[in-house]
Image (cartoon, rainbow, N blue to C red; front, side, top):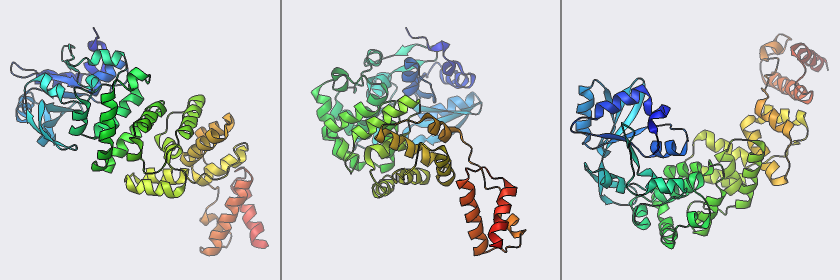
Length: 407
C-alpha cells in the first residue's frame, strides 16, 4: 500500500493542523484529487485540496472553534479557504449533481464519499486520502494510474455533458500521464464517439477556460500523440480555427528534448497553429490571452532572418528584441531547418544584455540640446556600438559623438 505519511506535502504542519481540526466525531476530511494523483505518480504536489462530509457552514463553525481563520472563496459551491501558517487550503463539502448544462452544475450537499467521487471526471481523480494516510479508491483509479490509463468514471458521454471542458482535460491527462498505445489512447469506441459528439460543444465554454487547458496540453513533455488523437477524433477543428501542423510541432518538441530545454507552450502553439502574424493576432484576440502572451505570440510568428551562426548577430538580436523573442525564433527556425548551434543557444539563455554606455545627459554635456537631433545622434551611436559587438565603453562612445558633431 502507498505510504503518504512519508511525503513532505502530507506532513506539513499547517496542513495537519487544519486537517486534524476538521476531523471530529461528526465530520471527516480527506485530501482529494490532484494532490493524491500526483503523490502516487511521484510528481510535485503544489496544492492540497480537502473535501469534508458536512455543509460549508458547519466547516466554518468547526474551524472557528479550532481558532483557524477562514475565507469564503466559493461558498455558493461549498468551498471555503482555511488560512493557517501563511498558507491557504481549500475545503469543499461533498456534493452530488442535481442538474448540469455542460458548463456549470446545480449541486446538493451529501455526506456520502462515493456519491461525491462519482461526479468527478476520471478514475484517478476520484481517489481520496484520510488524515491517517488511508487511501480510498471507489472506481479503480489505482490500477488505471499504474497502467497510465485515462478513464472516465461511468458513461463518458454523461461525464462530458456535465462539463464539456472535460473533453480538453481528457487530452491533457493523456498528454501528461497517459500511455499512448492503442489500448490506452482509445479504451473503447464509446470514449472516442463521446469525444467526437462533445467537440462542437466546446464553443459554449468561455475562451479563457479553453485557452487554459490548451496551454496545459502544450506544456506536456510530448503533447504530439495526444494532439494527434484529437485530430483523429475530429476534436481539433473545434479548438483551432485554422489548420494545424503536427509535423512542425513534432520537430520543435524533438529539438527541445535534444537541447534539454523546458517545454514552452507559446512557442509550441506558434509551431502548431500560427504560421503568420495575422493568425497570431486573431488567436490572441479570440482566446483573450494576456498582453504578455499576445506580445510573444505575435513576435514569435514574425520569424525574422537571423544569422544564428554569427554570435555578434545573435547579440544584436538579443539587444533589439529581447531574450524571450530570440528563444522563440531560435527554436522555431532551428527545428524547421534541422540545425542546432550550441553556442548561439547558450548565448540566448545566459547573455546579460548591456545598456548603452552613454545617455542623453552625456550628449548634452557635449553641447547638443535635447530634441530630434540628440535622438538621432543617440540612435547612430547605438547602431555603431552594436556593430562593434557592444565592446566600446563610455569614452569610446563619447569620442564617436564628438567625431559625429565635427563632421
